[in-house]
Image (cartoon, rainbow, N blue to C red; front, side, top):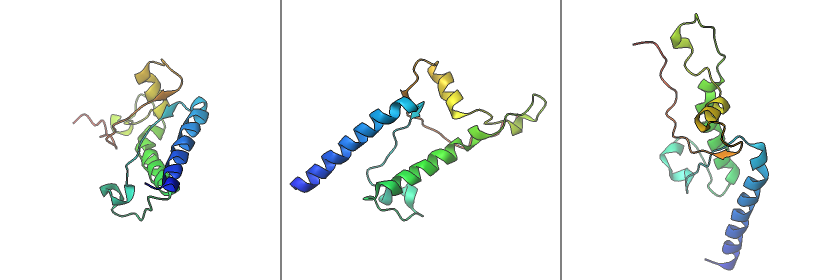
Length: 123
């Protein structure tokens, strides 16, 4: 490894550490996700991603997290609604606070999520 690439690696890791420490007070949930090479993974079969561009990978991860959280963004419905319509009427912050027991304000969570969740139809 050349001196230049070693400096770039150290600079990138230092930047990540400082970014996390500065953003942590404003966050309720930090989800560390990432693959070493996103462009060669099965997840990017239909995407054109350049691994050397960190914002490309960040955009893919942000879109995946947003898609995962869509069921949690549904409006709660009344008690007389069909139960098939209410799967996901909770927000992610409420779920994390419930699971963590509100033990900490800033938490690091690794969520293994299978989405979308099946509807509650009673069948």
